[in-house]
Image (cartoon, rainbow, N blue to C red; front, side):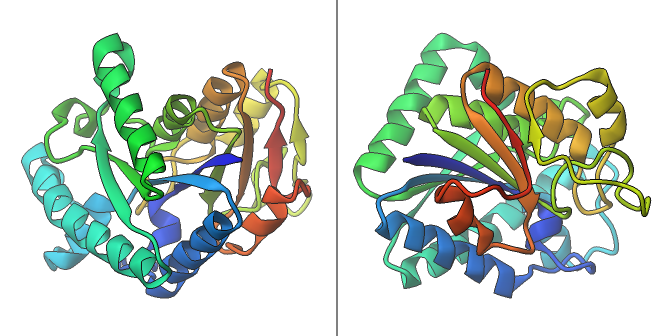
Length: 256
């Protein structure tokens, strides 16, 4: 089995923007244990800019492109250092891959990326993939992958994943605003309708730029490529075991 697991900034950090070390450790431990059981895993991670903002001691996310590029460059080093250390403690090597949107629309570059990720799998390492925010100005100026949600769908296709799991700050997709007491969790989606898109709303949190609408877009990309998708709560890392067993967790999007 081959999984693509996507984790967002709001899952990786505390409310103050600093890294949530306990959660990242649990994530790395769980993914490593799944690999011990024979599951191949590609991790798509957000958080470089947010971590850079914290590392630089900035009061808020830079408003200018140059500032965000600098924060991303600093934060990416910190992020990978932590992944390398934690995966290393559980016997695995983390391999950094920084991608940009244009790679997926250039057959030659896409082929190179596929070769690289398959070689990483061949060495039994874990590809840790992020958007290259330090040089990809277009993404920073608005043409983003949606806090790496859409990126994770493209990575799932690139990896030939059986399943894409997106970890977020809710239990999944609800039929209306989750703050509404009458909101109900949608456990299975066979078609992404306009009604579901309206229920998903818009942007994410102050720390993450995604949100449920971006996740629906990613789910559409993945399911149209024949890949199942699960959106579930990043506060419940241990549920990854249940998902791998085929148990119903969060919201499952059936592949088309």
